[in-house]
Length: 325
Image 1 (tube, rainbow, N blue to C red):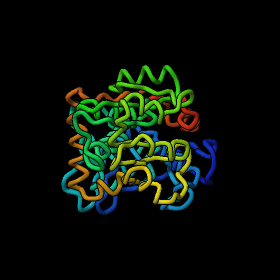
Image 2: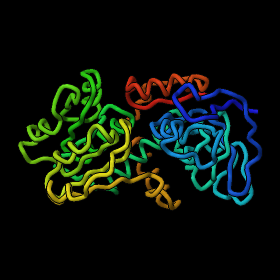
Image 3: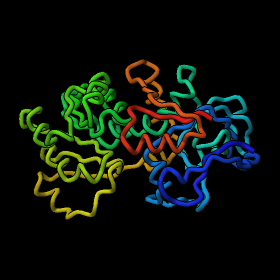
Image 4: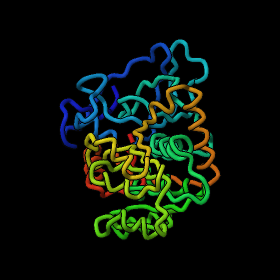
């Protein structure tokens, strides 16, 4: 029996239940991982609330990201062995002291990456990688807008886009978060609660606007985000922290300058094992070089998952949060 955090009914943070569960031996193509850290992400709250349906029904163990040591290997697994250090992003089941992971989703960690770093960055860091390198290739001299620039993905995006030579503009909710974003590569910050962010983007760019907007907020930043884009610009919606964007008349993209809009996911970009490894290795390289730092700003014992979710949803957190079994 191992400690885990399960959801027996959908609802608020209070439905997260700390209990003991049975894990079992790894099956075909699986590895059993002793976890040293579990990432906490907004997607975890979407499953808990039922916004995303659980693929395994109820109850389920929450969480989608973690890092630890392989302690057992199932049949058919050849590229991992007991003792390997791994990080992963996969389906539900992460908030646990040990768990079974599909071997083709686990990535070996280089010595330069700690378990806590890995748990804080596998989902957020690989998301940042595909956003700035694949969904839209950020290049030197471009104007880019990051919503929630002081959040988990936001801080990584700001550093990475800065490294690529972009002019990075970020929206934040407080002066403290503005200072944090600026310390992590954001050139200009906008206090979205006090300022009209679309008007400020126009001002900051001298009317040129942005090539791309990265939006993990959703409902409250749309459609104003479109007003930040130059003709043929790209609106990238990758999260719904304030609620999902309602269906909209696609002609709005035409009237605002033949814009592009996409709703990408890591699952699609990393569906093939070779793509998963390429994205992860690109991430490990920029983090290992020191060009992108992974700030783990909140650590909670596994039993305090309820508090971790409350803090995340109330926007009380910055950077990455992890649970430690």
